[in-house]
Length: 292
Length: 327
Image (cartoon, rainbow over all chains, first blue to last red; front, side, top):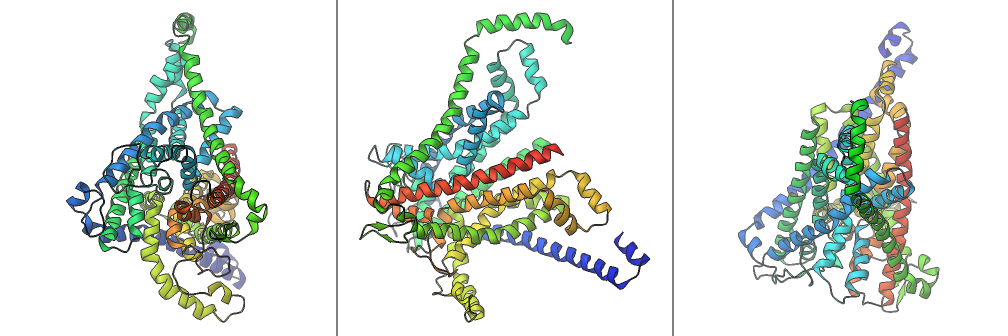
């Protein structure tokens, strides 16, 4: 239409207006390409930095030895196991609470005032500064007991993991067709059985997605662990004692001046990032495959 | 189907219902309790922060909010500097992140070839999944050196003698500071802002977009004059959400902010934020000390700030959703 008007009324004003509009469009397009390119470039730069600095330290000793003094050839085995234990326990604690709250919101509360409050608070917790969760757990579980513990770290992570699972569980349960519920009720099943054995089952893929995303989120968290599980340079599986974790070990080592600690910090960072990104890719590709 | 089978089904429901009478109320009670438990967790967090901070508020009064002191030796603490650092670094982060997110969302929804759009969209979301400590390390080892060697000297060369701007670029070139923290924050919050923008752009009815194209509008004009006005609530909600995230970010900022309790105009001056101050000072704060109470009070302030921002973003996003539903 643009060019048509220009040819029908070939006044210089409309032609320059058309040119101006086209220019503006070009300009915005170029800037938009640049913005996207920049973002992808940053992601690439982060991955490249991690691979370049982290790969040389990827040795067997890293997985078999515990953290040690600089120059002693320590590894990150206790930190890796500590991270797995704390993340695992966090999911064990957070998942039941998250799933049940999600069930409440989707199946019982729906639009009631209480449900709206729960939904809002869950969203708040989802975006709440994670360091404050650590501070809270310190005041509640560390200071009264008098010592840092892996258990306290796991509880802090559980509080962070729960809202993610609340959100996905509610969303996924809402996608279950009403006809399926009605079929269950028509067969005489009580509501709780319909929910647990029909709705949750039908939505289990989506709910599992939420659990995986929660794992990916908390596995890389550092701030809530600083004041709860503190870190530990020795091998320890005791949840009642301070426990090492990969992110906290990275934080300690990255600020050090020792060559081998720095190396381990980079390799640890590479491991955490790869783990988290692989979970995310699996989840997102899975969702896409599920949709089509 | 309904007419014939309703009668027997209903009696069956009754029978089964009686035999499993306890199941339903029990289950409902269980999920209701966990739901209320979520409310209690947030309540407990707020209570603990506020109660823990009371000694600081008592000792310094309202002056705590306006004092820029942080002196463990003389036992004098104030919130002004970290609050300033939190707001300033988030503001810088937002100023950088908004055009970046908008450009990317525009590209993803209007310009990208479909195959590329999903791949790049996923890459942007992967950026959101990278742990914050990784951003901190990357920022410290990749971003800080060029900031110290090139960016600040160049900025000083260009603006150092311009009245009004010279204060912004003053100070020694450490490489760490407000601007570096803002850059890192921009990269970190950009994916979530982009995701919200993309969702609201896509949720706009295609008819509106196509009628604008039909009138001969260019892609940019459709975005600027149709999509953006239509989706403004969602866009602003996404931006506010990003701001809330930026203010609470800890590890990445701790690496690059330079940790100095200082209020000033310079973009390159080392500073601190509430979260970075808590992370760095907490290990040296004995239980029951005034310093710990001051940190808790700062935590309460941060909680309040992020509560308000997240509430605003939520109101805006809900409004945008209901608008999308109506049309």
